[in-house]
Amino acid sequence: MTLTATVPTTHASRYLQQLCKHWSHKFDTDFSPEKGDIAFPMGPIRMRATPEALIVVLEPHADADIERFKQVVADHLDRFAFREAPLPFDWQ
Image (cartoon, rainbow, N blue to C red; front, side):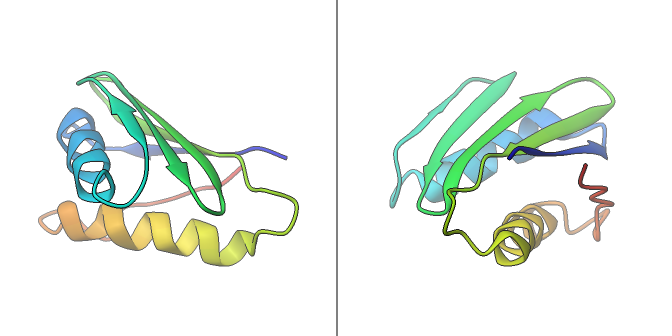
């Protein structure tokens, strides 16, 4: 299962890099201004920044609490996006 949210923001690159740097102290991360991957315990998080949006893809492990996974990611991104939070996450 893969969950994808396209989050409208003109600051996608900034938020992607902040989240990757924040979690790089605990988890393996690989990121550039355009894309980021985080080896999160509940499953990989993959992000891509476009000029208009941050695309967030979650790949939960079979035993992951999917609702909790979505909430943890959204809460952390909202902290970095405090000027425009809460960001709209429409998970597909």
